[in-house]
Image (tube, rainbow, N blue to C red; front, side, top):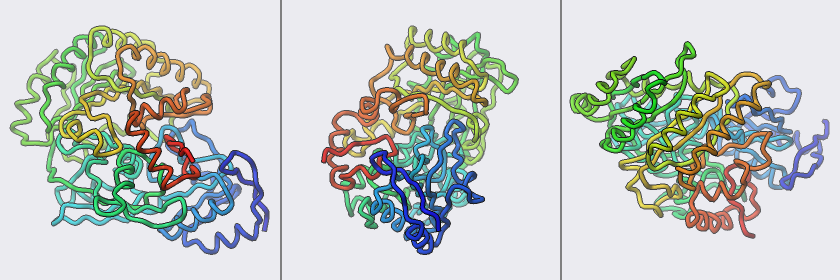
Length: 474
């Protein structure tokens, strides 16, 4: 039995006795992986190809008992911990160097109750697992826009999605969650139990424990009107002006996004993507101005299954590529902001890169600011310059493009940003280059203060620190 070097919670190094590690492994139902094990490299590979981290131990949890044992082991030996759900994370916080990774990706149990219109989902599920199960009963809930996204991360951080205008964010549809806390306890958080924790889980991310399963409210969702209209980049200014007016008048049933990107042949385009989740007949009327404007070079809007809509952007966010992006919230499009958007779109270093404007409005904007830990309850676009490329050699120029794009938009955006889209890469020393300042902007100042109080209660030693971190004051 070989002793093992590991990174501590303070960034130092410790040596784990091989016999202790062996005893820990024997207590698990799941698999414990170390450097050199056959499955180790595949298990540490994450969605963002920029992330290349090597944990000392990786626990592939088979159930809640494994999670509790992993938390206890890491806490007892003061080992750095990362928690991995089912899907991608731009910052790569689900993996760490030298620490212990609590990997929930094998925990994919799910049960839909069509009568109550609820779903109980374990933390390893991705949208591509979750949505087909609920759609089998003609039900759905807001849950991101790419099938490779993890259910746990999207819900804990807020959760933009195609149904948000009608039914609110993913976190607004969370009814309860089972959580393993930093002291190893198993608790349930809901409106009736541990209400303070339930508030914090809905937007506060993984700061307070390991959420092992979730109960969501579902809604009746059949076929939707979905797809996109496409225009050449030469018409981007006119399209963006039209989009601002069209999106501002959108009913709750209609949620949109606009992107400046390239088509599969590398031609620069501007696309307006959408989901209308109401009456198809009424939707056709509402979308008529959008489909007539230009006219578009391509009109790909049609009735489709919700699961087909959810997969529409999968090719844009392919696993394994290198990703770097930054986030700000933009209330509306003005002439100067449109000019900045178009100008910097033309400077991108990779044809795969894009600028995304993701709409939040309707029901998602009418939730009270203090009702959940997601506080940005006003109509806006999540404004994301997304650099995408394949080779390490392209990292510097692609990252520079995204940063310059983000900086050019700062005169027009709010201080606020979206916690799930905060990024950290090896080329930066702190979250978004500004550390705590960007984290506070993600949660909002007053919400952040309340989250610190919650952190002091549930994780006073900052055991769960690899996230958009809320530092305790203890």
